[in-house]
Length: 166
Image 1: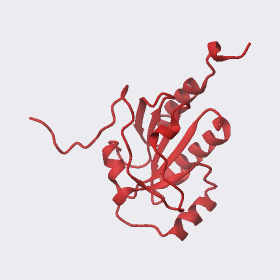
Image 2: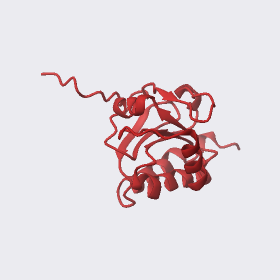
Image 3: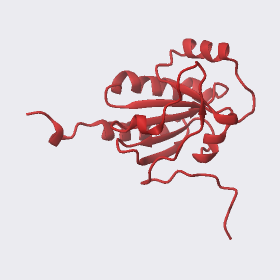
């Protein structure tokens, strides 16, 4: 019997499915093709989530700072609890948390959240430079999710010796 309640479209080793996002600050919503050429770290988060605010957003910010030339970082604010934030609240959170990566609202609170099979917030999806999903994990535990993500990001952003200029 097929389970039709599972909306997850993420498959490791397959292309990243499209997302359905809304602009928060009036900027254009990027297409996933805009990120081809560098690995992409996607953070699905909520400002109402303590693990997101306390660990996940700082981890994403650190990756922008440390790997900004070699890694794309994209945030998807998915408020699956159903409480919307105003533009002013988003701006205040952006400033208070020193967010250094672009982020967008998930369509109707949780469309991409469901389609990407998020287990809650924070949820991470790592995509290689060719647009193929490498990893998907829920959580912000420094000794589990963040440690694993750190190792994978290091691996994906490591310079290929064959691409170095002589």
